[in-house]
Image (cartoon, rainbow, N blue to C red):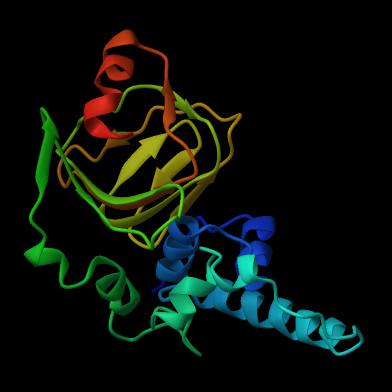
Length: 215
């Protein structure tokens, strides 16, 4: 996909290459890699460097914890590994992550102009992964994050304090960042969102609704 302007942070991509991301974060990066040649090239360089370094290190037995770890390696085992080149058929990795076509999603209403589709994770995996559908021109409540948050734009657009995000763009935010996304006034927005922990909303009402929404 051309015209992608926003990419994962270098440290995020390095963690993905090393299998160090949590399962939900790894899923969003995998969906981005499926569309972004720039990040795919960066990943190949990182993996080449990593494999060269590993050749110089004595092999270490794999622990039982590592065997059951819910890291970004899960997506490679499950068939959502990064391809050799970005897919010519858009969102092929996304379809594997959500278990079908976007048009077939059974959306659940969260509130006025807001729907979501939670995505199941492997047993014992922490974090949250879901599709979020936002009506045109809707402003989300201002919030920060208790951990990392990755957002891949699937359809439409949104803007926040850091820029405008279009299909293929990925927003990579840390726990010290606060923002207030506003969906496109005509198209709205559909995103794939992963987070380590729940959002930290400034306003009281979103905080009261968190037990119901899961955000």
